[in-house]
Length: 243
Image (cartoon, rainbow, N blue to C red; front, top):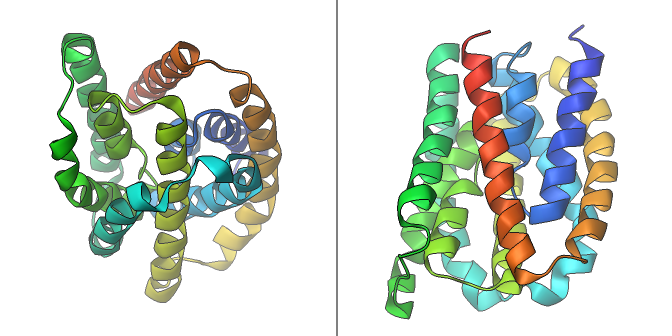
């Protein structure tokens, strides 16, 4: 049986961050779970825990969800998720970890170099479905749906409610779709269910705490939290590559 302490730690970190920002569960939890779980088990476990933590937080952030903003992302994700699930069965552990770390590092580099200077025009939103596809691929592969929309929302300079509404609704939609495909593909093994019975309720409880903190944040504070979460996530994944 995998180390239960690490399982709970990953669920707490992921749930807290997800409740606080609306995304980031995977990039926090995977830094812990990939230390002792194979990608074919860690990926589905992340997806299940994302569903649990997002459903718990949904009632508090529902007023901030705009279906007009969310729909293009979700439609793109419908295309991307099956691709990500297909990659899950053929990718090696080192390559999987490297992929996760690379995604985070690219995002942080973009923010460091261009974060204060780039502001895309509103017409750039026509590419929202493309971002949805990218997020869908990452969701099917590792539950990383939130990274691409986070980059996009930042360079478009969307405000706190718009960002949170998109993060929450898109990530939940992608997680549900990913779970259905993972079930169909046979990845939801008895071992997965044993671990999920622990990780999902722990993640949901931690997400509740995160939501309470989120409700007290201002615009600048929320942006700072998002950047800090991604920075910590990148470090955790990089460390895991050398363990």
